[in-house]
Image (cartoon, rainbow, N blue to C red; front, side, top):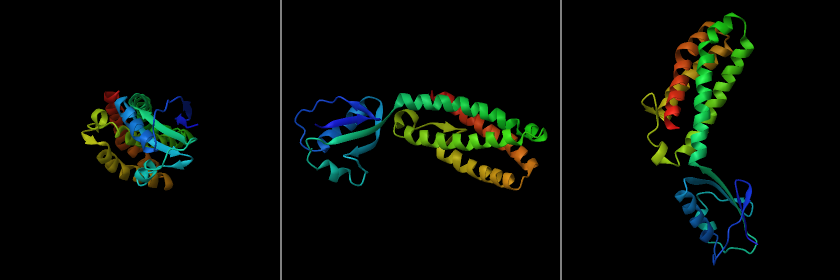
Length: 198
């Protein structure tokens, strides 16, 4: 029996007279498209289908017990992720603003925790932004500080690099300055931009 899993949950999909794997994949992608979702991963019989071998896999005959596993993201999930991240970046911007004071009062552990969270949040943001690009009509014109996401992060990257070096050299003055004057305003800008998207 042909089985279907969407994001790990078994789905009850009725087959009509589909003959090939492509007879399933193409309509499924269209169905997602029509319902504010996008397919971000396909596994057929345990084998990941990449963009390169999509056509070849699509031409294969449908077996009696073929197993389809789809990873799907919805527009709603992206909105929700951006909303969470907006709050998180707002909170982090306040923490980064307080770094000079925290360093003076010897709270180095709290400072390094905040910095770790900033790095993780930026990674998370980039992941969600990549998924958001699957919905260009909603997120295609999104900007931070008048720049698209890529430009913004290209300019932010050297600041984070300097910050990393300041940490390695234990240069508390530079750490404080970068946190307050470079990183904090950028995190605020990310948060404000995301609030407009949700």
